[in-house]
Amino acid sequence: MGTQGYSAKTKVVTVIAVSFIILLIGGVALSLLPVNKISFGNGQASPDQATTAAIVASSTPPEFVVTHISAPQTVKAVYFTSWSAGTPSFQKEMFSLVDGSTEVNSLVIDVKDYSGRISFPMDDPEITSAGSVQVRIPDIEQMIAKLHAKGVYVIGRVAVFQDPFIVKVHPEWAVHNKNTGAIWKDSGGAYWADPDKEAMWKYVTDIAKQAYAVGFDEINFDYVRFPSDGISTAVFDKTASTTKAHVLKQFFSYLHDELSPLGIPISADLFGQTTSDKGDMGIGQYFENALPYFNYVDPMVYPSHYISGFLNYTKPAEHPYQIVKYELATAVTRENVLALSMASSSALISTSSPDVSDIHLAKIRPWLQAFDLGAIYTPAMVHTQMQATADAGADGWLLWNAGSVYNREFVMPFVAGSSTSTITIKPTASTSETF
Image (cartoon, rainbow, N blue to C red; front, side):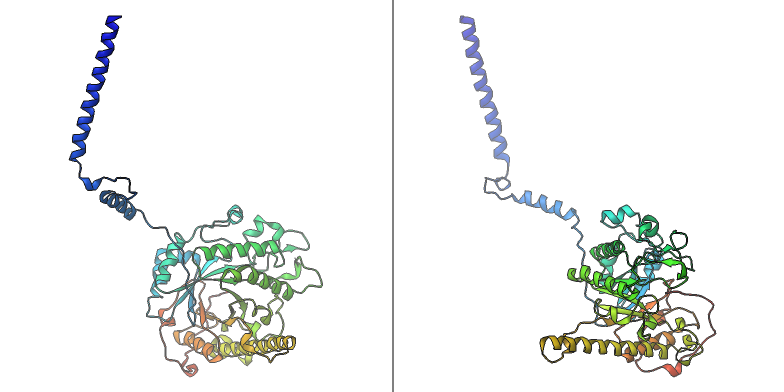
């Protein structure tokens, strides 16, 4: 018992001694630390801690933020395919055309082209599951951001109803052959989605929303029509009492209702001759039906696409000023008549005087020819189309070349004023181009 008591006392003394030594060493170490490096519970970091946090923050890249810019007062754009926009050599040329020395202040770039393939990844499960994404433009957000930094307005083009890819994924959306029941194709071998399929409407609208989400400032819808070639064997999912024009008008209304409330500017491409034709040209495109639903309506007034004898010209392609001026002046007149009619109808309801300023219709902004077909198109011939556009009272222009190859002189500043008498016509070209 005495040995046990001695041992216990020894342990107590040893513990006290060791504790004293630990406290002594800790005190010495504490005294060696600079006082200003210690936080005393006031919730603030010491200067060294703040410095360390700043270093970490500076080494962490800021989160990328998608931006949009407003349309220029007068849009002046050139078109680039998705492949060209994603190819370094073409992309370099594209950026050179918006370097400030040319007339170009906007670009049109494919989001979904005639193949049905989408040119960059999209954060939408239905689009992803369809498999239609084929990455052609890497880092799309950064590319658009660089264009925005230059003040360039970026338009995303979506080819709608001509879509050979999606009709094979969703054959129930396709135009079918009434004789065989198989998916129908036109005389040129192209496959089409049925314009009356609302599932297709939703699909292209979702694509538009995704394109806007990565930075495109406007969504341009092309191939917004029924097919035109070899349709004798085609069967559409519309009732006999419903016209093609009515189907497309419903589609235009759907696009407007889905996208305009989100602040997404939208535009539609129409056949050029819809501006002077009194009907729907057999494809459902009745000019006035598009005007209330879009920010821009873009008639494709390529002179090469008018038949011999139009306006009594044997070769309309050789008369770009006259063709473009006539078609666009007719378009402006028809729009003014529609605005007055709508204002008058509104006045009858409200018993007030007609006020055209209260009527909001699309601006007319044409596609112009920048390719050789029917004639070799020189800079003077491109410029005279621009002049005709201004003279007709239309609003800006978009230049089309399917290969995205442009003579820089096409878009260099030129002196305003009619130049029709100075145009030099070169021999007819053999290359072809389609809408």
